[in-house]
Amino acid sequence: MFCHFGINTFCDQEWGEGKDSPERFNPLQLDARQWVRTAKTAGFRYFILTAKHHDGFCLWPTSTTGYSVASSPWRNGNGDVVRECADACREEGIDFGIYLSPWDRHEPCYSDPERYDDFYCRQLEELLTGYGPLIEIWFDGAGSEGREYDWRRIMDLVKQHQPEAMVFNMGAPTIRWVGNEDGLAPYPCWNTATTAKGSMFSEASLQWLPETPAWVPAECDVPIRRDRWFWHPNEEDLLLSLEQLMDIYYRSVGHGATLLLNVSPDNRGLLPEADVKRLLEFGEEIRRRLDDPLAETTGSEHKIELELPVPAMVDHIVLMEDIAYGERVRQYVLEAYTDGAWRKIVDGTAIGHKKIDAVTPVLAEKIRLQITEAAADPMIRKMAIYGAQI
Ligand code: FUL
Image 1 (cartoon, rainbow, N blue to C red):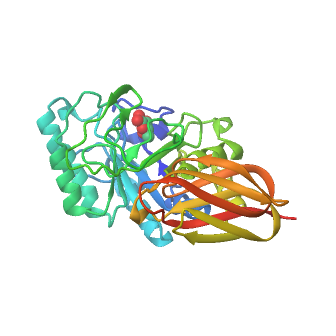
Image 2: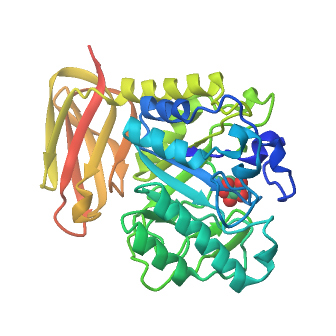
């Protein structure tokens, strides 16, 4: 789960210019536990907070600038949203990560690249050292088109303080942006790449540091309210429907990528009730469709046949490679067996970490996976069949 919260939340805007007074930041009912509990209950595994967005307003009491929660009326300037999220994640048992916008529209030294690199590194170091283990550092390319930061220095800090953290899309990333803000991975979406798009506002590919591994899986970010990363009043109608969320799930997680779904706490500091309800429905629906297989197996052969306990209407097949051994499958076919004959139901290429094939319900006694092209012996960690018994 992604979480955009900040001074914008109080100003009905997406991109503040860095001029809004900290006086406006006053989420009287802020409850990070409500955010994180919702994430956990809905089935999300990690939670990434915008510690600083493009407007430069910091959600933690940084020593680098007065433009932060420390200058706000919230908790008389003694609050720390990053701390509350980190604590809530630890208590709920999900991982925590941070977003720190390189582009800063408030900070006067932004126009002096060397001084700003110092400033940014100090901010990053506070976050890397003050809040426990971080699962991911999210570097947003927006607004930084054409700007060079001292990525070597930035990466050294990450490696020194949070060597396990995933690094999103800039410097020496370990994961890449899928290239759109719709939460959709193309198919196939291979885990290896040498470049990725840097921002919505430029077609240019990002230059990565030479030590970037070729293995950079894609992460798919998308807001739960259409085109809105931050909360705005009276916009419940923009909330994605359950059907739209399921479609996103099939085309992100179901294509082997990670889904990073954004939520926006409101100006009370709470996730709106309608959004909470939708998130819980989403988690529930994924579990309803994909938690209880009719049959399941593993295998390292090119052909795996799986018999159902009784003939059933099959509507999903989930395939997973044992990704620790890499992405080996290049092409596969799924077939259903009924009335003495095999019938092709899926033609696929990549499997990777996970491929979800939602098929037109088909009556089957058996399902067969045939891997028709592979870079090395396939290692199928899971082949699972779902549907309704008849
Ligand atoms: C974009 C930003 O400009 C949006 O405001 C948002 O933070 C999104 C995740 O990335 O590039």
